Length: 165
Length: 165
DNA sequence: ACAATATATCTCAGCGCTAAGTAATTTGCT
DNA sequence: AGCAAATTACTTAGCGCTGAGATATATTGT
Image (cartoon, rainbow over all chains, first blue to last red; front, top):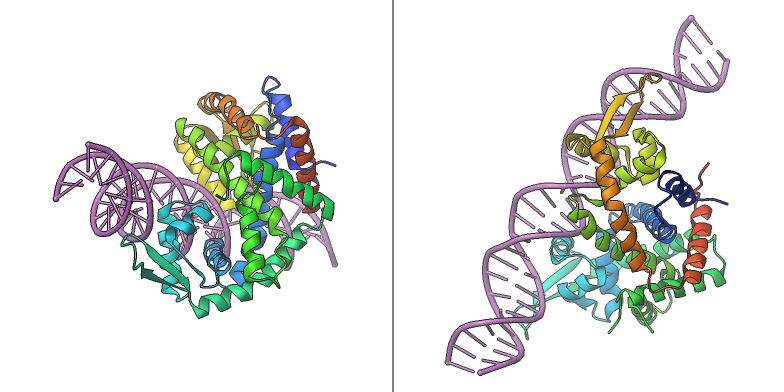
């Protein structure tokens, strides 16, 4: 009936009763869950010679359109990392022959990143296990709970400006 | 009415209609929120010459007991990082005079880590802004929604073995 | 036309983490 | 008591990210 964050909250109220630590009930759990999930997923990535960053790029290209093509700027917005991080991710993926970089014909500043056949095969091989693991991690919640949870998280994301537009 | 994850789910159903991507409705949002929150909190840490890792150690010591003392193993369990990460965090904090390391008198393998006066003052200076920012980030949810959300996240954490015991 | 501004990508130093392995100490089994 | 297994903390190589800034191209306002 108590997780790690309950202990943390009890400790705060003991050591700093003047501090209202209530936001941590949500924030602490968000952080902790994200970390737990990351650790679990990392195993699957490693089994396919991947890491979370590379998976993220390959998966984003895979789902974006039938050409599996996107610009670094698009990848950056999707991944919420800095442009430097994307450049380095692409360097690694290109060196392994999983994506190609081609200058845009219509805008000299732009680069088109495309999934290679090898990259497509790899991401399609990883996806089923990936989704299966995510499902397994969610087994503790009913379908109804998952739905409500997803809805509340969406409300929160929207309030923080995470729009599609 | 739609956040980034809604777009992602629509893309998957378009490009891989055979794949049941539904767990991403929760997992994708968890990851995205954790990343957004981290980015916001990082600013506050930097304003106090801190980073998330250092803040985490100082805050854990601050709340743990009146002596503000813990072992590296305890810090490791709380932070969910590897032992090497804790060693390095402590190296940095010790070099800045924010914590001290002292060998345990009862167990030769154990080290006692204690917050210094300087460390205590620093963490107490950062905490109010930290909680205020967390509160601000949660403004999009009603008190009721926050409560329900925290409850569901706890259920999920417990199902993943995040026990206090 | 042209200067100013905006956009897109890349570079790099510094930091922090993991994974794997080491060394020292304690615990538990027989 | 004696030894294998577990625990604790540390070390290091390699990776990936941020933040700041460089470079090149495109767009805007006059």
